[in-house]
Image 1 (spheres, rainbow, N blue to C red):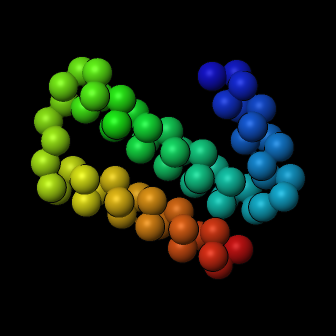
Image 2: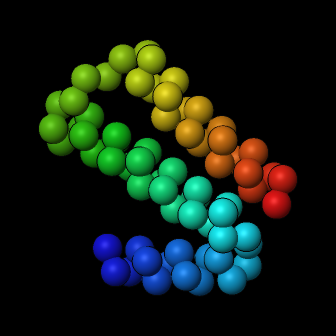
Length: 66
């Protein structure tokens, strides 16, 4: 977790902090979802996949507008 914070610190030097934080949390949420599905057999449905895709699309829009 500490290393993740260090990467956020370095990322915000090159892009706005709001964008850096959105990317940081989006990656965390998406990876947690994938880990939950693979290792903990969390439910996998079309609506949950769509939710993660919307998170990723939002991050792309933030970065494109930065």
